[in-house]
Length: 447
Ligand SMILES: *Cc1c(COP(=O)(O)O)cnc(C)c1O
Image 1 (tube, protein in one colour):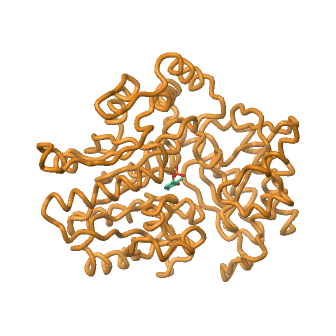
Image 2 (cartoon, rainbow, N blue to C red):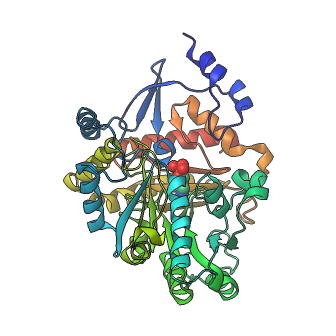
């Protein structure tokens, strides 16, 4: 069978201009192991983007695979209204112990975007049922990303994904997000006091009373180009939310599970959100599952006699899928057994050093920024003025193709190259992938 030809005959790939596949056909992957993926011709690719940021502990991790297999032989799925099962109960009781304080009620979905929809509906309904019917608006940060369904897309702010749909999206108040590389206050990461909270303060003054929730990606705006902002900013947002009775929704779909060097990005700010969404790392990248977690206080506003009509009438067929929960439990087992979080500080630092040493001096590297294992390299046309490349040149995409030739999956965000490898990456691979990425860059932009 000509697998590539058959693929193109039937499949519409996500987030792709399919015409690009004429020059860059799909790579048909046969198997995976650790950070390596092997295509049907046996070529190896280093997956330093964790297959869209979800693969947490390596491909075909033996311990997760085994847990999944065992569960598949026991119970594959069961309706989750009125029924339950051990894997999901264990998972929630374990997560409740490690989540930011107060988060204790778990509502399951099967993808990140759906958990965002849940969070928005839950917040609106809470206010409605506690006498604040005027709270029907949402706030979000500029350049945020929260998924692709209509509600999630509405609170997101990236024109690349949302522009065409604007006529059918919710009207959301957008706070200008911190941009620490191009700070509007002329500050640097070292001397910043989050002066840019000003934008949020003004927005809360104007719309706080009619706003149900503010949604953020804590510390790291992933799809915006791995933009990193300080924990202090979240603390200040938390204060504003308290002052105006606005929920803080933390979208930790990308940042949860050690990606920022701590279990959750909110831990850096020592802030508890009212609602948190988790997905990507949750099952180690094995099964599609997401969870929207909230507080006793929010939960209680829905708890009443049936005929009062206060229940949260939101469901997904695959809510709380046992196979996914078995994987999620195996991930927590590995975190405990291998003390993954304890290994991160030193290894995160080492990887950042390797990336910086290689890239920082290059004439087109504007900034190397990092949090956890995530290291982003922002390419610019002019280092002094920070002027970007003309996006029509598709510089990042050219580098991506060079890297693919060499067996490295980079998939840049515009002209931001980044690494977001599985947490189990070994030192020799750190050097190798950074070398290959740099060679690919040099082939496009010169020394
Ligand atoms: C990936 C992502 C989502 C959407 O999750 P899906 O499972 O792709 O729907 C939402 N928010 C953030 C921050 C993400 O990175």
